[in-house]
Length: 218
Image 1: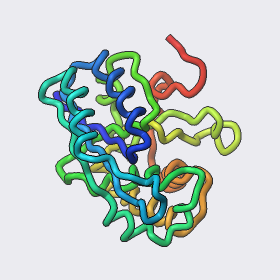
Image 2 (image 1 turned 30 degrees about the vertical axis):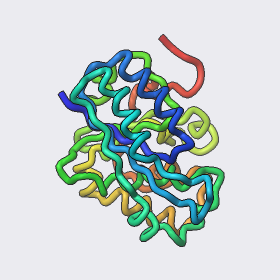
Image 3 (image 1 turned 90 degrees about the vertical axis):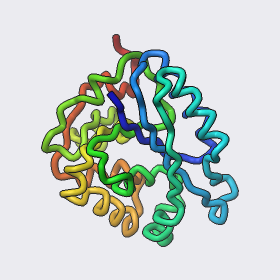
Image 4 (image 1 turned 60 degrees about the vertical axis):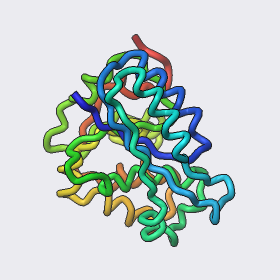
């Protein structure tokens, strides 16, 4: 069974990606296709350097340690990102522009019906098959509650670090287009996370074990 994964970032999060994939292959021998969205924005900030082919190959070799058929596909998002976001007030934010790339998941191949988005600061402690196969029929995505947002923003506020997208449903509701429009027109504290929580029509709450944000649990 092939599982589709999505990660986003520049070369500054390469180490985080590496640690994450090392923990992934320790517990998972599945075949993975990882779409790695990146872009060069050094004209905005000299530190915004894209993940390059050498780095992609290094990460892919790690992923293949779990399953030789796994692969990483580098997706250059500079052109589509700037086409829609060059005037966004959120280009200058506590978070980098790369956090908005997950909101371009509808630019991925149309034959993908499900993909698991992962932040670059995660570690795995077990088999992710139950998470990937979680029933989200009729929902745009599944995510866990945000442990701080639940108290300070709303009881149904979700964390965007782990997102199981039902891409077919997202395309029907145009979720990503709505999120990008919000990022373009409104200054937000938590960018993609705020945009998703505001724009989603129907979302699934995943068990907290799939995105533990505070004390570790068995």
